[in-house]
Image (cartoon, rainbow, N blue to C red; front, side, top):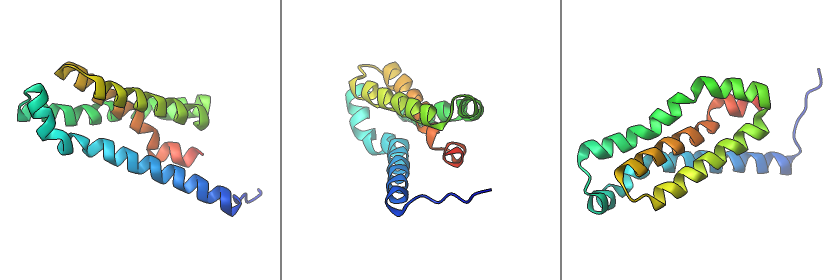
Length: 126
């Protein structure tokens, strides 16, 4: 078994790509708390609605735990990671353009599904 080590420049690039993805995932996870004053005023939300928005992220994230492993094994990490990144992007754009609470909730679920790509399973399979 050959021990394959990335060249330094490529290893640094891979590290920063995943570090940025992790930072983005953490930011998307906490954005509901950060934007709660704005969301409360714009959409006339109550505390329960804000909690449901925060939970929508985790609902999407949790729903992809098992399917992600299967998809990674079947299609490979390059296709799946980029596909999930696209889902997260669509979710963030739809969150920014949402006009109702239900639009915000669906967007948060999409963001959670897309952020699942950063799980340890996806990183370990690269």
